[in-house]
Image 1 (tube, rainbow, N blue to C red):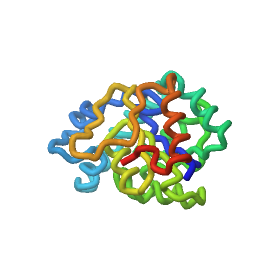
Image 2 (cartoon, one colour; image 1 turned 180 degrees about the horizontal axis):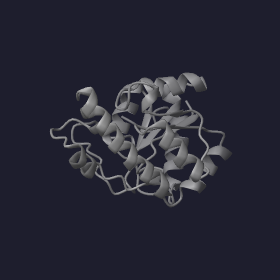
Image 3 (cartoon, rainbow, N blue to C red; image 1 turned 90 degrees about the vertical axis):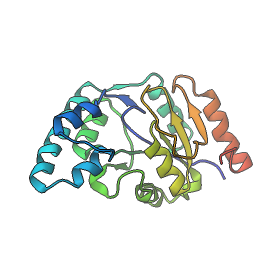
Image 4 (cartoon, rainbow, N blue to C red; image 1 turned 90 degrees about the horizontal axis):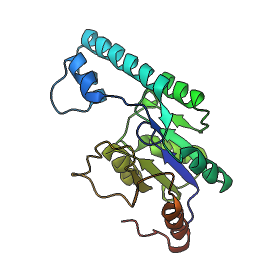
Length: 207
């Protein structure tokens, strides 16, 4: 079954925004191992509001300094030329996501952010995107730099691609490996070949 749609994470996948999550946690006074959004959600209302404000300030700065990774613009154009639908799925806020996309002249439909429902690694947003497109999850690929992206794609039933060019930790120790690993959007030939094989062979080698 050929690939018809590609779902992208945003930060550290399409763009480098240099968000420092450890610095945010220190400013918020958070401890423990819960991810940032989940940790804030468990706080009393007044503390949570203060932490959401800190997060918003960092995300605004990230949106203002975000730059495309090498090869992203050309890759997106190649995807468009091939008739592939393109979406963004991010744990960022909608305001700062749309600000980043607008400033960098990036066009995706749909754009799903944390206000839209359960965040990654919950697969619900991927199913929502697939439903909007009218595609089966098996006709789609989830591309991201972190465990949550890969887990969400696996749980939703999509093919998965881990982008490693952002240089951040992927945290895949407790997760099944992705179907494909991409080091750079500037060198996508092997990725395109793999995507074409999915259409010819079914799984394309994905576990």
